Amino acid sequence: MEVSISIVIFSVFALILWRLNSIKKPHRNTNTRANNTSVQYRATKSNIARTDNSLASEFTEKVTKEFNVDDVELPKEFNSLELIKTDINNKEQQQVIEEICRGFRKPHPLLLPLTQKAFEPNELFDLIKSDPQITAKVLNRVNSSAFALKQPITSINHAIIYLGIGTVKNIAMHFAVENEVKFESNIQQNAYQKLWSASYLASSLGLLFAKELLLDDASDISTRCLLNYLGDMAILSTHPELAPSYNEQKALYQRVSDHQSQLNINTQIIGSKLARYWQLPRTLVRSIENNLSFLAATPASETNDINENEQVKYQVCYIACRLADLAVINEKSCLETIRYDLNKQLDFYYLFKNEQQPKVKQLLNLFHDMSFSKKVNSLLLIN
Image (tube, rainbow, N blue to C red; front, side, top):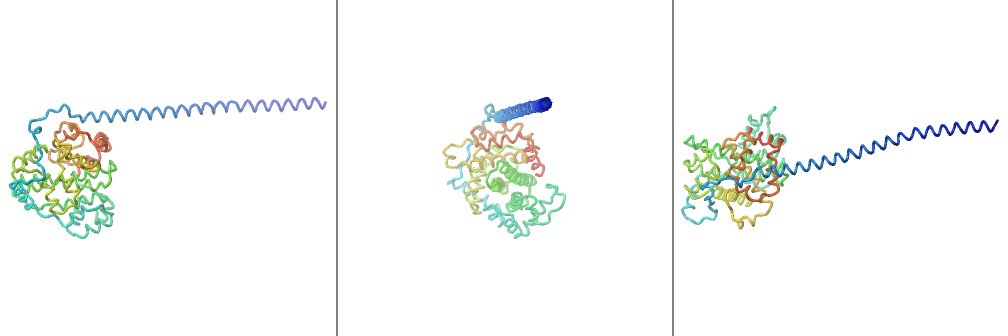
């Protein structure tokens, strides 16, 4: 009897163990399937990433091809353009330069300190508030319809916090360069207003481009863009007969050709001379005297001594200024319109024809990015 009971108990125990073992097996199979699914998901995700990278590569190549200028027909006037150099020994040219520089008023005292360093918020606040006139102009500007603020900004400190150091510095510097001469001719006044607007837009675009490319000291690039219009403003102030060059929507190379044929000088000569007279930093002076370097064929010997960092700044500034020209002087309303025929604009010919810096290629690719285009178009609307 005891043996029978032992057999029954053993059988029941064995049956329980068998059932438990049967229950566990499906779970192990399920986990295996889950693991296989996870591996397949990771593999799919990896394939998607490789596909995305491939698409990005194809997109970059496509963009680069869109700015190819090999098939552009070059007019005789463009092919024959040679920039007059800044080292002038001709007495007649020197006389013209002196006349123009004397005719353009001295800059506001704040211009020099604004160009000399990168600012902390409290330093910029202290500098601007030291001049009531510039303070008032900056506040008027930021509270204008251009910025469409919901609440008015009542102090420079508030403006710096809300708009950023770079934007407020741009505005202050713009007014520091301002020439308040009233022109007798409406044609001359209209042309000067276009230059005034283009210089501010260029400085804003330069600031945006530098930030998007993560370049050091974006404010420096913005300053260079603004000051690149000094020569235009000074020449137009003294020679009203050149106003049609701006009012008739001429390209930059045509305006430079007009200046050189009539006055035997160009805007980078006058702009750099003014910057020297005003004792602006040497890096700004040199940037201004090279701001047309991508307009015409330039011997390699003239650019070999410019380091890579400066080359990037020169190219970014040139693009910002040319876009500002197209938007203001040539009345192009948005980046999409500008981008459509950018490779046909002769002012960009040598920039696209020669090798661009990697950062500049990145900038040109951004022209096809929707988010970036919105940022640029918002600046065009503010202008």
